[in-house]
Amino acid sequence: MTQPTKGSAEGAQHQSAQEQATHPVGKMMRFGLEDPLKLDAGVSIAPWQIAYETYGELNADKSNAVFVCHALTGDQYVASTNPVTGKPGWWSMMVGPGCPVDTNKYFVICSNVLGGCFGTTGPATHNPATGKSYGLDLPVVTIGDMVRAQRKLVLSLGIETLFAVIGGSMGGMQVLQWAAAYPEMVFSCVPIATAARHSSQNIAFHEVGRQAVMADPDWCHGNYAVENKRPTKGLSVARMAAHITYMSDASLHDKFGRNLQDRSSVSFGFDADFQIESYLRHQGMTFVDRFDANSYLYVTRAMDYFDLAAPHDGKLAGAFLHSKTRFCVMSFTTDWLFPTSESKAVVQALNAAAANVSFVEIDSSRGHDAFLLNEPEMFKTMRGFLTGAAKARGIEAPVKQSD
Image 1 (tube, one colour):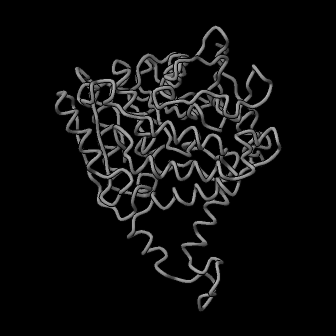
Image 2 (image 1 turned 90 degrees about the vertical axis):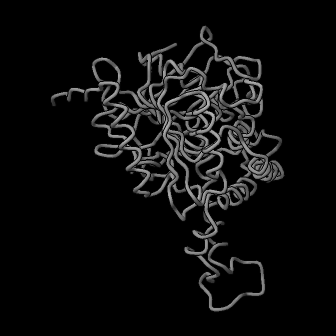
Image 3 (image 1 turned 45 degrees about the horizontal axis):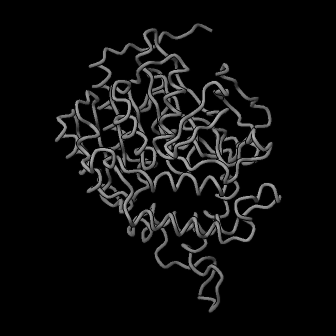
């Protein structure tokens, strides 16, 4: 392993998605041939790298580290500007000074997932065996592989235990994987709007998205980078279909209804007559500027393969036996992608394993995306849970460095 490095921030606001995948702005931990990453597919990759960001200060006894896991198309910039989009961190209302995950008190780590496209080894990064980008030569990765890479990062930072692991959606899957695979390293965890396995319906939605990408002639069987092409149309359609699942019927109705887009009557054609059509097209077009198409295939597949109960003869409680980790599970009333029933299944398994668990179902009309939005009850729950857990662990705030 090499020492962590940091890319130059100069010109970061103008960095393209491809540049970010290969030369990310921010922190990077690189692992050499002597430290391969073993994958669930039965193979190893080396060398490999993981891009990450940190916020706040680590205290003297290294007891205040919080690991935040991002969702499907997220990134490591949880509380700082994304260098591709120029937009604020995706959870800046949750993570930061004075926020529920208070960086005046906690040392927050967030990394790009394995298979992603923001600097961590993924299909768009350099394959040392060929001198080109990996493309589909990268082995298929799992949620377990993502967490295995994160663990190596945490240990390389000199941290033996994490005070908390937090995340929603695919990030919540990673949280559950952390707690099941490395319970001795996790004092507390907060899985939000997630499940212990991907449902058949969710796998179906992902397959539609993948087929849209692969049907684009510019996908070139995954070799579009070599051909200097981009399957933007297919990836855009995939994003449009997925984005519908992130919202509730109520939120779509409240935001758009059947309102027309910049016209007084329908066109009797196939332009974007309705505001919802225009909105989805915009979501699709902006997504292709920041995300790699092959990464979309890899991370959706990782979610599909996730099944925490499978290694325990289908009994989810077996994943948490003898766990001393504190759990706070959250769900949202109108989330039909990861409905409350999925969170309750996790809670029931934790109770069966005699784990320390609390559960909150938050009343929200915003669907699955509620975990990324301004939801006061979620913030209050997070703050209260972490405050109680910090008291139980005896965490002291880090000493501020003098200027």
